[in-house]
Amino acid sequence: MKIVVNTRLLLKNKMEGIGVHAFNVLKRITINHPQDQFLFVFDRKYNEEFVFSSNVTPVVIYPQARHPILYYWWFEYSIARILNQVKPSVFYSPDGFLSLNTEVPSVPVIHDLNYEHYPKDLPKTESWYYRHFSPLFAAKAKRILTVSEFSKQDIIQQYYVDADKIDVVYNGADDRYKPIAENEKKEIRNKYTHGEEYFLYVSALHPRKNVKRLLEAFDKVKESSNLPIKLVLVGPHYFKNSEMESVYEKMKYKSDVVFTGRLNVEELSKVMGAAYGLVYVSYFEGFGIPLIEAMQCDIPVIASNITSIPEIAKDAALIVDPFSIDSISSGMLELLKNEALRQKLVENGRQRRLFFSWDKTADLTWQAIEKSIS
Image (cartoon, rainbow, N blue to C red; front, side, top):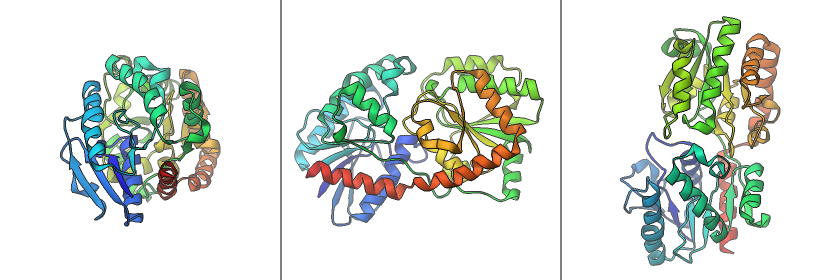
């Protein structure tokens, strides 16, 4: 087979959830299927580490697709031209965007439909692009991959897609996320929190990640407990999050909040491994990779009770209401005061994490690609 792949989100040291998914799946399927040819299409200069094997041919086409107008041009003209020239067996797109200007069978990964439920969380042009084109992409797709049963049902309900056309393929987590020794934990705490324990948040600082309420809940925990605990937030700003910034400025205990920005996997896996607990209280998620990363590090999890999160976490998380500051703060206090609960969540996480692996993700992705051709 000849497969053209949209690889515009493979960015050295800048990959978020979709980029991480693309990296792990593409690395495996290209190496596992040496008889097939892959054309990786980038929108800027690429790093050689993304050319995973000899059957991968990288190409750069312009313009750089980082704005809705440029999304349109890149997919409807630049990608369409490549597809119509190469005439591949399939076009695979890990970020869910397709070209409507080609007859090549196409397989997008639609991770979630947050923009349909919370359109105001995105800039107006981004929101319009997603909501206008995503139903068209879903209709055009030969098959659709998504990362949870929740997202599958959402796609069916929002876009009236036949259930048989959608394959659920769970994400995995990097093997570098694993328990670390006590001396390493101490080094990390000394580096980031002056030696104190900390709750951890990992993700882009996007409105739907609910950082605003997390900050308010943490302030409440500090005020009611006076315990020497800090909050570490790892991730870049994603669009403008003025509500979060306003809450932060008003916090009584903002000196106990640490923003690290983006960290590479080597460093983040250690920061995760040294955390007291992960607090993951997004109000909309298609999957939530940090949940599995925390479980692999033997770190207990506090997580939201809505969208895909209960499906992924099961009994390996203390479930809270993401819209309730009291519920989030109560969960954090419970974890601080109840060591038996903390250990139970860690043990449940050890069992739950066995259900997820990038090898399994890649195998199921390949099966879906083969189905799209047959």
